[in-house]
Length: 406
Image (cartoon, rainbow, N blue to C red; front, side, top):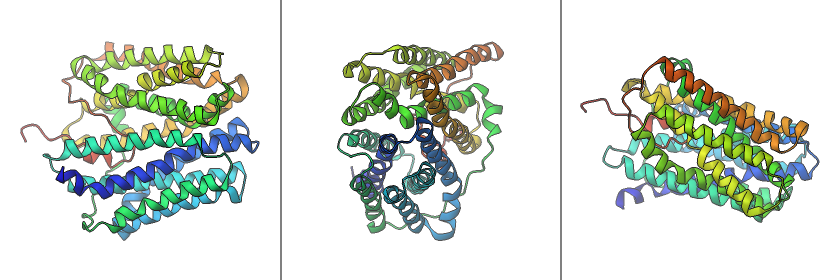
């Protein structure tokens, strides 16, 4: 308990940050539709977020090196607050996209700094407990953020002001902590092809994860509204997927450590295809059935990133783990940048079910590629499965595997 209390300031900052950043995506989608944005323009907002997120992963370690952890965190939080506050001042898809780049920079930069701080303070004895608490608080805050959509009025200054207040509040715990900031960590080299070289299937899996999850989170509110859900129900719709993804990690992790990860990856993708096809063909308005479909979507789709990352790690040497983590995040980001705008464009052309058909196509391609790869080489001795957050390039340093014999 004492070790967890020593990290309480970091945990509270993460919770407040997630409450702000997690709610702004669905709020933007509903606000944009109310203001007359097309579905494609709503998708552009989601893509802009991940452009900012990717840039933040690059910039944050360098900014930390120049001004230190505290000042860098304050700068990124300020960007997030400005991005939220500016929404009611200039109502335009292009302007909002630039603001979403700012919020993407905020979330990537702030998480990079928090995880660098954790990495510097964790020991092998405390790593499991602290990371477990970190994931728990982050996931709980993410679910609450989705539920906030029920009382955040779209296109309202008050709604965006509340999210900006939460973003500013995340500064207080970290700025007021008496713990000294750690030494600036080394920046991992970004070599995207290391993932492709070590595990083509693992690389493909994280790209598909980057297509499915971000498309759902950024464009899912459009689907929910088209299905007749109210704002409070859309919050439940999104939160159900987060809950499904969180609950899936434990049984999926156990199975992924027990059986061939390629079989698990193919099996999860088959299940995801079934769920997505069911959601794309459902034309009713029963909210419980839609929530159940969302929960099943999170249950089958969200663990794909962690399984893919674990499979790629099976082929990496201990000294390659940090660079591999950064490479996988890069590949995830490429899918995440493209998928929201593609999904929204398809919805414009073919209607709401097209979002799930896009995700189905991604998983179907992964199934086919997985079967090909199973014929190409035998399974490798498995490393321990870990739930891998998609938060920053720094996460690889926290989850670093110890060399054998140490």
